[in-house]
Image (cartoon, rainbow, N blue to C red; front, side):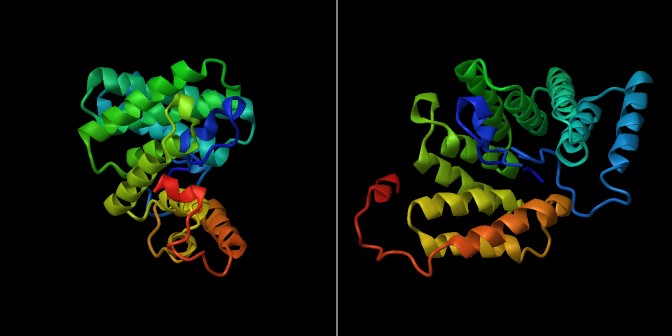
Length: 258
């Protein structure tokens, strides 16, 4: 599942809405935990590399390869050097897929997600340029598939976390995250991001609703990450919320975001 929120301004690369995409799982929906996961990813990688070495290349093969590299970095590797290398290889694989099939929405999304995650680990040195490139590919994915839940989530996370001078926009972020949930509410990281946005707007009941949906998800995509990251985070955030929010007609600076 994708894993997405930022972990710091420029030096942290804003995590590009990937708070975990996984920005952090960028792969297609994995609805069950495979046997011996995540160690099984290493054999998945070797299988795909053998297919490519045999000359059987297609956009779909490179998309799958980009997904496996993303999962390796998200779920198996712990050393930042190995994680960064995996994200970089994932970006290269997605770029190959785009070269073969520019109309592949998942390829554009995976390129953006892998690139953003790699840059976050390295530390951002060309913020404006990198953000622009990432946003272009996420926008292209949404253009190709307006219901691409992970791309909608990533765009919402970007707009939520970036400062205004790099294109941040809380109102548009809310719209993208709500669209992501409407497209597929089982990508629970979108609900986490939206809950945080609602909390900052003092929409406490709306935030609770999203957090409870994460906690009680019956069929979350990426159950491995959901159980280890998204559900515990939702439980923690729910405990931190006040009992109720202020009256809806109260004026506050946050209301300007709506």
